[in-house]
Length: 72
Image (cartoon, rainbow, N blue to C red; front, side, top):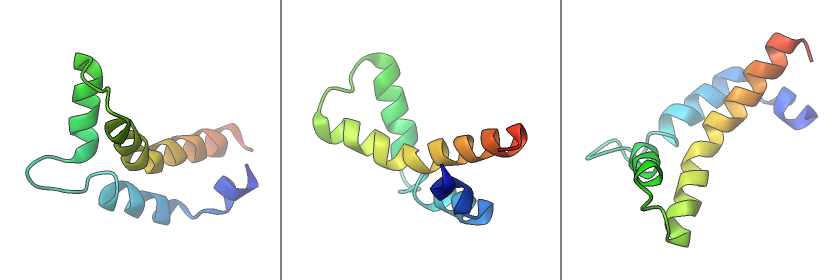
């Protein structure tokens, strides 16, 4: 967890905006993949990888915020 603690919050926020929401037009991949997941259409390995790839910054940010609030 030291690795996550060492990442500055500003870097994670930039990653969330740039990688998490890319491409901006016509629709962010993350939004598209979450919609596919909720509809049960997320079956191709490439789509699952895409969900994890574009969602990773948000997961890291959530872990960092949780650890910061917890005091760890």
